[in-house]
Length: 121
Image (cartoon, rainbow, N blue to C red; front, top):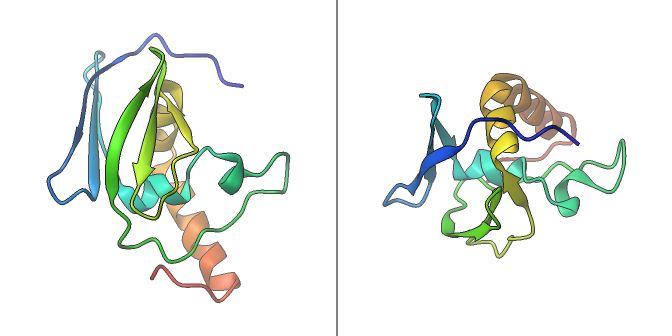
């Protein structure tokens, strides 16, 4: 498990279209995450599996929306999506990991969809 960063969010804001989450951190970093990206990279066991090699490719989430964000202690949030998925706990460290690895994660996701003949929906 990754070490919690010394960086904390100062703002989490969902756009009015419910398709983008903005996260600002106290070190000046500001990141935007699409609802689709957050959903297909959910840290939940449903997506990540329970061990190595068990991660699942989640198709058809191009139009998924964020219904609400719920705090989990002082270290994370739970995101409720309109497809009823809400079991992922997004830590501050995970948000930074997603931001810093976005391009690689997205390319891998699109390649997996292609390999499995699945679509974004």
